[in-house]
Length: 441
Image 1 (cartoon, rainbow, N blue to C red):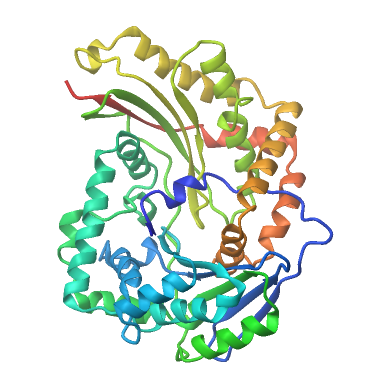
Image 2 (image 1 turned 90 degrees about the horizontal axis):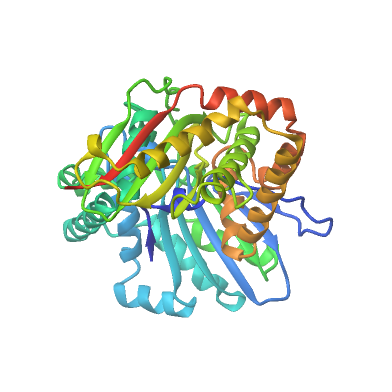
């Protein structure tokens, strides 16, 4: 299974809950080659989840957009020491759950299985990362698959509108590129470029392996040493953080597409995960469009009866992110944008009014409390699965925040004051960008 195009959209904003007093402890082990291992035993269920996060994503593609995406796709197809037949057997042995996720900030490889299959799962992860097969035929097939996904995403009205908006919010920067590379650029990627990307970034000191489940620290340590110990040590590659984006300056962008619906999206630059303002911005986004008690839902859906779907997105990007408010409405454009039905203009005006209300009607103490509770519940639901618990440990550790960030984030939320959220609400949407996706005539 490959999840690339929408991985970072699904996690719109980290939410958090206080860690229970009896929460299992996490053991961190650093191997001589630089690989960091995190183990969190959770006895009793007979299951285990293994996640490797490599600190290499779209930010590292530089002048070769798509090279990391092609590598991520190839990882699923086998390795030099792992024939297609053996790969299929290993996947069957671990229960068939083997996936790769591509993100602007990282690459994630995940396996879940029973505790009895821990070593088989470790072998599967290690072999696909150490020596993946990068022959010309596999690279060509991977290029085609990624290109097909990119074309499909370009036909999706929401995805197309979102990509256009992000390009306006992060102009000329890696975060402003579509997550999936342009098919024309993909055709130019060579096996040599993919091999170089692997050698430069997929080194043990740039990886974190997190294992959560019904296993002991000793079991995981020994299995990881057996399979990942073969990775040769290498200097940690230096990542170049993108510069902060300027305030949006362009006017509304209109996209015409073959679609029976209309999307209105308004966005503004926001803090990245590393910022002290991140927790505050999460709360502002939740006040605006998180849940049925949010301002957007109450003002646009309940009071005016407009739109099918609405909400906010706040992708947890490492350095610089963005808050996006969106609304989906029926197709109201029988004669082009200038002759739009008044109902469509009403949707645009309603979305703008809801966003503007953050400044004109300051956030209340009740809204702050409600947003905290909403984020807490979202987090708790997301962490019900072993996969998410292992992913978050590896993710935060690989991003330089430390696995403890997953536990400390609730305290960050609780420390946000009413003055903080009111200040950030004013700053965030002082200047915004707007994209409207309309049906083609």
